Amino acid sequence: MKPLTAADWLNKVPEVTLSFWVIKIMSTTVGETCADYLAVDVGLGQAVTSIGMAVLLAIALATQLRTRAYTPWVYWLSVVLVSIVGTQITDVLTDKLGVSLYASTAVFSVLLALLFAIWFAVERSLSIQAIVTPRRELFYWATVLCTFALGTAAGDLATEALGLGFTLGAVIFGALIAATLVAWRLGANAVLTFWIAYILTRPFGASLGDLLTQAKTYGGLGMGAAWTSAIFLCVILMLVSVAQWSVSRQRLAH
Image 1 (cartoon, rainbow, N blue to C red):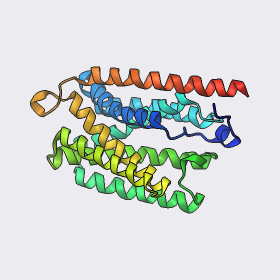
Image 2: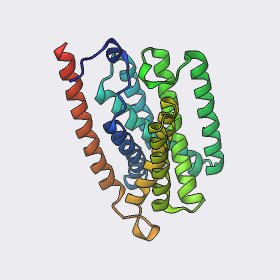
Image 3: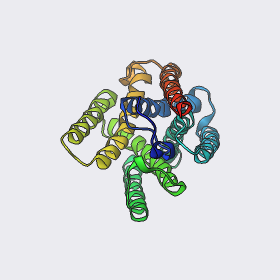
Image 4: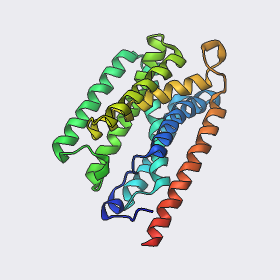
């Protein structure tokens, strides 16, 4: 087992491995399905769901910011809640305020570009392997939230407004992720390809979530939001538990 370095102790973001991407994609799907389940199936409505999840996210992020090193369960809880809140932001804009998906996708794209520009201008790096200061971590989480909101808008734009459907949407976004992986393997900039893939996993997860949950008459598989959320959350819990055990074991060894 690789020994921990000083950077490992300080960095607040996990190493980018296959497990990282599996949890990330599943958390994006959970964000789509869980938000729909709470707002529609449970009957809380978008307003109550948005406020409740925002409060939980604030608590989770406060806990994350107070940790001194990467703590898997705190980090991934924050990601899942960011996914739900990001989904709710786009849903409120679309369903309650009547903002078109074209407009919200464009606005979130510009906002994300501005966040990247400011982050780089201040820190001279966008690498997630160096999230070692509170300011960098604040940039990181603001960017992550924006990617989830953008991904939800872009995913809905592709599958609904442009009429691609859930299956084709998932295939297209999955193919774009695969192309990004190939580009990285061929020597493309690691930081650039990471963030491209990170952004693409959100609309992929949204399309996958809709494909699994929506009724067959609407082009889905009819699993429902409750079952899909429960299954994916169980897988996330299992993978995060393994990661937490691994990190705890390494730190005890030191």
